[in-house]
Image 1 (cartoon, rainbow, N blue to C red):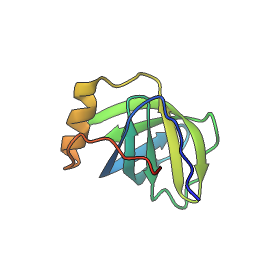
Image 2 (cartoon, rainbow, N blue to C red; image 1 turned 180 degrees about the horizontal axis):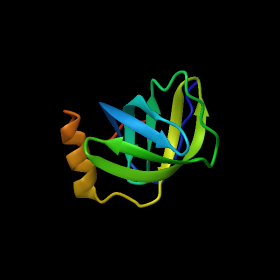
Image 3 (tube, rainbow, N blue to C red; image 1 turned 90 degrees about the vertical axis):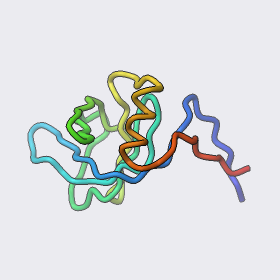
Image 4 (tube, rainbow, N blue to C red; image 1 turned 180 degrees about the vertical axis):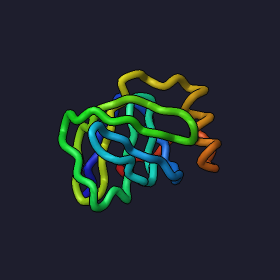
Length: 108
């Protein structure tokens, strides 16, 4: 069975190391696997646990992006950014991760 999900923003696949920082607590290394203008999905966050609505900072390279945890389970978390990214910012982050700025294709 295939589920078609309508999203308000294009999502881009990527694979690049990031750090997720919450206060209080240490920075947690993770892997940025999906990016959109308003958020991201980060994997490899074991053994850390994050709560819904917890403020966090996503550190990509030398840039910090403030946001809140939207969901978290099994070492993966979705983060909604406080400030939407512009197209050139998304393209730059995707290039930094070695991926062209092509949106994810949804299954039909």
